[in-house]
Length: 543
Image 1 (cartoon, rainbow, N blue to C red):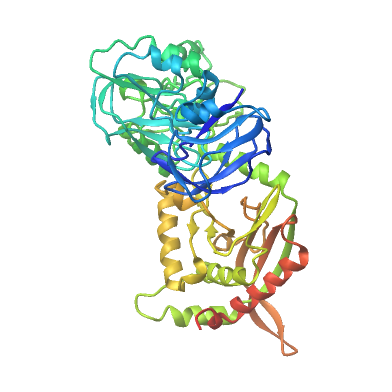
Image 2 (image 1 turned 45 degrees about the vertical axis):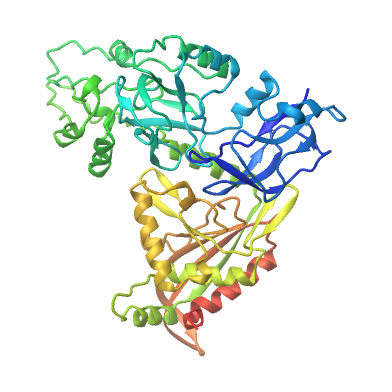
């Protein structure tokens, strides 16, 4: 039976999409998971995969054409199947219950909030189901960091409902509807997959007691556990009976922890705890429902170990802290594991003479209000070299290789939760001071979790620098879909041979990790030779 595929919502603010490229043509066989097309949204150009199997019977939007979210994009069905009824009137909406179910699967940020006709029919008049939005292109689930509205509050379109922690950052989520917040489906600290129930908005006083249950049944969403404070009480360890040989004092009860290991804590308290190195599972929360707030961190003192009386005194005790994996840490683990085991890595190591670079930077920074780093010079040199070696600036797909004519350099930045890669766009066209200013701004946003998805997407090459930590040599895992990543070590002073004499010189080791599917050894070596010319003779980058 033919299935209508509608234009998906691929970003939280997307209202319409443009087909940048079709990767399948009419008559092609489609498997579930195949990439149908590249869709240009308001934030990025993203791949759109099929949730159905069959034959591509009809393309409703040609390359370069634009249509609104939920309007006809394509039709998939059995080869030779008659789809005239769908084209003559049924294509503007899903042709069947199955079609509607598939359409809801293809809409990552379902804030139009009627995922299936059976659910819509069960909703009281004016009631809207708000689902977990997809706030980044790789987001699969989100965690409610903070609710900025409570049940009973009046919500206007554009109001910030909550702060959602994604795999990349903690982002504000605004309401696309007006009404009263009737129900909250996730408590602070709880997680849900994209498109699962987040909240319900509607007219004040509306009974929505059965809506969440119907929504879960219709969408297959997993039901969230209730706030675990009662379970925490049941599972709290009982105080050991007092004995004559111990004077240890009982530690205060820990703050309630959710079933998935998250702690109830305000964002400000969480940030303060990270700065002070406080283990949140050891802190007694004094906020509502045992939530940890700012004053709890400010007043926290680790429990001391009391003196032990008796002849046999233990010399130590086993102890450990468990830290729940953040959304970012889980996303890093997934993407790097996929890259390491799907892309055949190999490594090319070189050592560059940095004497000229040191002298150049010193002279350049003598200009008033100008300051560049060695990393800025590496980014610029890479960008210029990539223009000469497009094979290194490429991306691998199952059926083709993309040679990028533009150069967007990702710069790896360490943050408390892991690693993010903001992107310096058109780096080859920017001056050294412009690159320096942009890298500094993006790194600051990264550490404050203020990067937008657009600022972290689209890289064609990546630079990872650990030289500032004293690391002189290391290898990196490729940041897919890039074909290569450059690992930059520290500048080291050591004896070198120049003009047949041993003198004191400054060198820097760099390692290029390459995907052998796109970059052959000779190609990578030629790229490094070009890079060497720019870094060892930096004046060539500004003339």
